[in-house]
Image 1 (cartoon, rainbow, N blue to C red):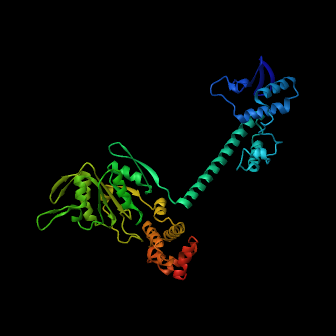
Image 2: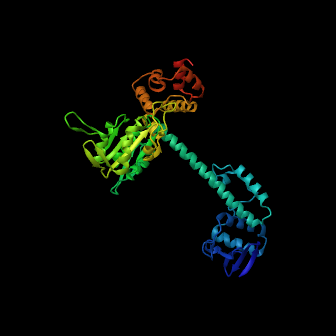
Image 3: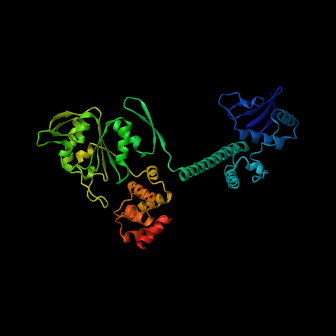
Length: 433
């Protein structure tokens, strides 16, 4: 095998009528007549390296007889090397020919960074320097590509939101019998997780602000799992759970009794507004799977599940929810706790008017930031949107559905930080702030 050109770590070789590039670093031989295929598995050169080698050979060594023969041979097979310049400093990187393959990439910034990198690794020989630079350049271009893709995705999402609102999402649920159920709709993002808790028979406590959709989400979870849904609000007396024997000697069943006996999801809403002593009876029912009701002992149905909801974490009242009780530690210990906050997709579905939605979320943010005693819930947004559709004027909607009991002083403290649109202007006019 005849050596035509020695470039240090790289040699150009001729074997009969075939040309090879030999890389000494790992003793790999590349067959140039066979698409640069190597003689070792998983050994390769990037396209950028190939192009740079060809450009360097043609520019610096074309005066040699053997190299001239190689260039002629390569031109006949691959159509020439005139368009393979990558790291040629003489190329005008602002030209259309360069930019057509690097659209949306700031080539001036890229070249400046590459020049800085050249200086940092100038101690390396030319071939190693080229390899390092090509990898970094590829990475930079990839970052730019990811950035462009992100911008496109955001633009598409904004276009869909502006023209079609929130689109229904497709969900797949695995039912207890192993079958898969598909559903399409706009639901709270925690719905799949709630279903998993229910399927695993883990008592669950949803903690979140008022009007965030806990009741609706639980009903949907039970429906998807093929379970009956039973509901009880804050328990202030034991009989709301246990039931009682009336004056005629008949047992009056409760929602809890029906779920416990027949199976289904029992939803205890406003748990932190319940009397702690009345909830103690749940402890034994959950732990033992049987309970002594007034009409006798009942063993829990295999499909009995319990989920509770609260606005606090059972630690007592706060600045907004002043009527909440401290719950017994043994009761809280029975439940896993899942934070259930407002969901953007649900809110936009209930309040499709973009300007009204922005005003409500902006108002909520400023209220929360100042820890004021008000809430702007999904329910409030939905009612405001319905009133808008019925033709009520904006000031009337703001006063009756959104701000409600807010004082003028509180509104005055947040007016300058609200999202600026017609709704915030009407708020300021309404309260003369």
